[in-house]
Figure 1 (cartoon, rainbow, N blue to C red):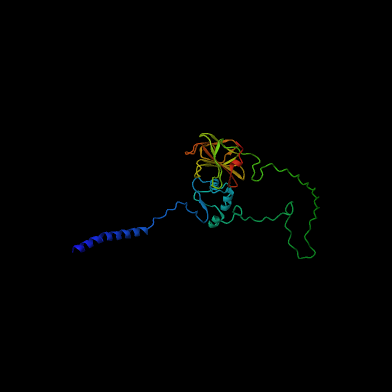
Figure 2 (cartoon, rainbow, N blue to C red):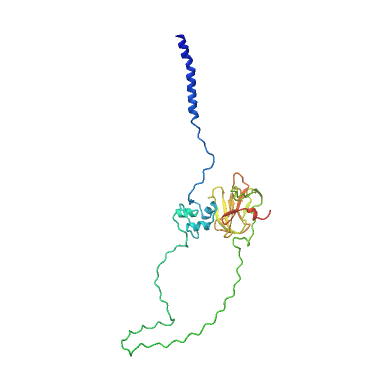
Length: 296
């Protein structure tokens, strides 16, 4: 009896060991979920932008690296490019087809049918209506004497070809030159590979931000995320420039500015108050500003 009790007590540790092994095996089969820290893949399909409060067509074009003209053509918009909150704008041809927009063939208009006017063959008073045709062969309506032919008009001398008015070359900047928006050290260079589309210029808070070239202010606001108080100036059909992180904006949309005119102040970036972010774009694509700006 004593022997059987000892054997029974000896089995207890073995049973516990078996239970532990089974529990460990069960835990081993349940792996911890893997959390991916990579950014989600880009969404596929048509690219559409829904207009929000404060959006302008220039701001939307800037955000998506395109031009106002391209957006207007895709979405059948004409000057002055009015958009409303909630409008859905196609950003490419696939989106335009998905939204049911056919290629633009010119501005649509309501055409009202008008009666077709019969052209007058003479410039004199209207002739009396002809008498009804008589059945008698001996009678006929009197004929008007033929009008003498008009003397031939003197030959017109072709006008002298006018010399074309001076203007910028297509997409060029021959009529003006660029200047630095602020004087300072370039703390970060343009890098198309890393998608850094402009340059950082180090200055001091409160320094005047000046227009790098003459043009029209097409955007002045803070609706573009990551730019702070942003000013965009259109210089011609090809070139735009942008001035981000202003502490104060000194111009409004629609205002004409000259090169060197104060348009804002440095100091809007809380993390780096002396930084001005500056971009130049040609036909909607970012270009390296240091290749256009003069040597400091």
